[in-house]
Length: 286
Image (cartoon, rainbow, N blue to C red; front, side, top):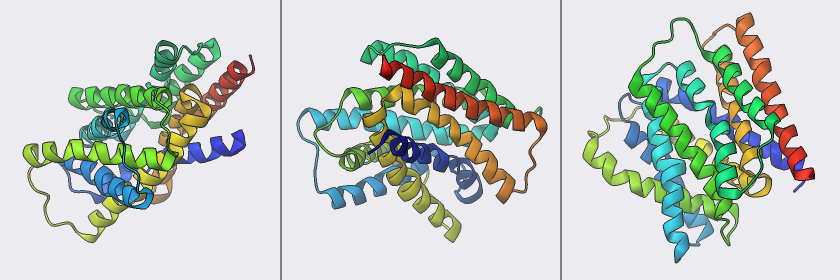
């Protein structure tokens, strides 16, 4: 597949993830972060396993559980905690540090060089997200902030290790392994730590279905394919598109407005994504 198409499909993943916050807060029952993460991962993973009909063996069984924990169990649990505890703007700003973490983990684990332009792009992305989504009334909850930061670190490790451990199977099968492993790890914890879910209304059922099939299985297939073909430092800045998409959803669904400062933040985010891609193309060409 041409590089431009790889970038397009990979970018669709964070664009769709931008809907996670609004779906969580508007449709799902409040206060069930582990259960929500488990229901997002496990059913989608099992469906993909039934479709691909390939199970991990040997070292890939252990690696699937490690990656499932990093990319799904830990990351999604902390993501839902942050969504429940923080305004979306604060959670998104803290999470925007992930591309910067990926750059240094790629240097450490993949021996990939770090270009100054890539660091500038990642730093500019954090500032752009802050301008885009933070408000003067945003409240800081340290549990939520630590959850958002921990989620960013977890997914950064998962992104880099997904590239380091390239499996002998297609990306769809690899996605099925990780989703199922991540959901299985969450299942006993959710059953023990959290109370049973209340009866779900139609909105909650649709919300869980959307987050599992579209926001989980489909988007992570795109994401893992992009990591394999483009590399973590190229893919990670695309994650900054998530708060941009979330802002657009707020404009069209919640009738929010966009201030001049937010418009500047959006432009800075998009410019940072472009600069991050340019920096990695330069690395690949040398």
